[in-house]
Length: 144
Image 1 (spheres, helix red, strand yellow):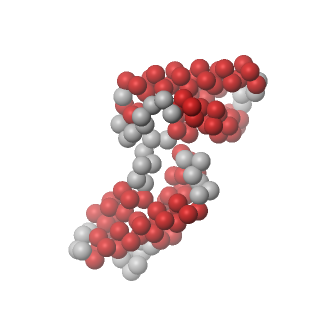
Image 2 (tube, helix red, strand yellow):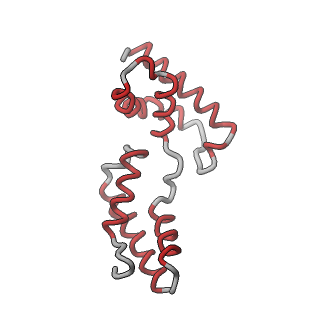
């Protein structure tokens, strides 16, 4: 892509960064990363060829790159762990513990319809409370 230097590797790196931080359950899915990155690069190129500005092209490409990656279960669990259980462990243990709790909390998430707007809904506080309870029960049964 000779269009302002944005190519497949740019989109791959951007997606990997987001997945590593907020969607670790997808960070090792090479097929997903490759497919999304290729779609984003192709959409950027197509938008550029259609006469759009680089800014609009990037907006279109990032919409495709990050589609359905707006509500992070991991970020939510990590937030609960950091706010509710930080006194039980050292700071460097919080992220690994949250990663472990992601699977434990999956049944709680299954009870809710997660969408882009979910974090701003009244149901989010119910989810937060349910996640706190599920993690507390796990700790009581398994220890740290």
